[in-house]
Length: 265
Image (cartoon, rainbow, N blue to C red; front, top):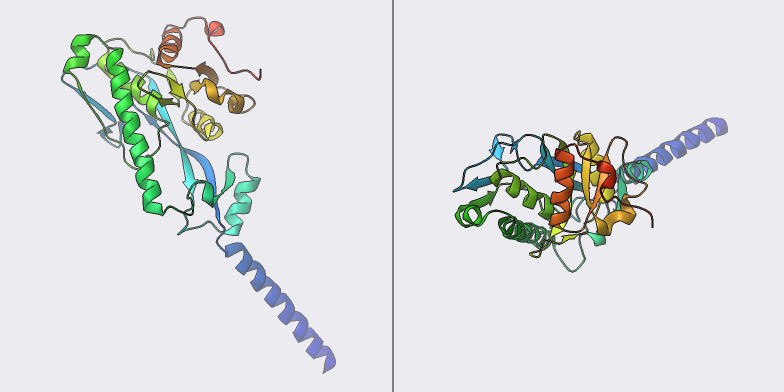
């Protein structure tokens, strides 16, 4: 009887231990999981909808891509990832685990965070339109109207690519020369390109989208060095004029070796 009792106690212990493990790995954790998000070609369509609509002027149907890149953030205060997902992301080379409060501060609710991100995006659209008009012929900039149709995207990091997309659509000459180009960076009304978050993941997103060239803010260069995926050439950009000069060389198959790149200096 004693042996049977010990055996049953042993089985019960292992069963409880197993239940404990299952319980532990399914518990929500106060972290978010960061990973590469989708790429959006701002001079093309998404599911039949034109991302940037320019009206009032003759439009160019230029080839190539100008990919705006995103980062996916998995987890919210109301829907936290499980421990197993967090461990998997921590061990992954193309994901990152960050504290929840860095993205959802304790003094703000989820709706406030979403509204702030969306406002940053609409502000970047306004700056992109303003800067693009300054780089187009006066007759075109005065006549054209611009509408950006992209839902579920927030933050200011699309500013530079939106600016380039508007210029490309309103210009008879292609900015890309048919090349596959991606980029990221904020834009202010002086045309300056600013740093963004998650550039390591955006580099991966560009590679996955098939892009061959990447325009990165100079302020992000320290994060770019050592994280460039194979087959992707990255150039450093300080303002929209830098970006246009780089695109001109890429589009014309010019000397890429003379273009500014990120270094570890």
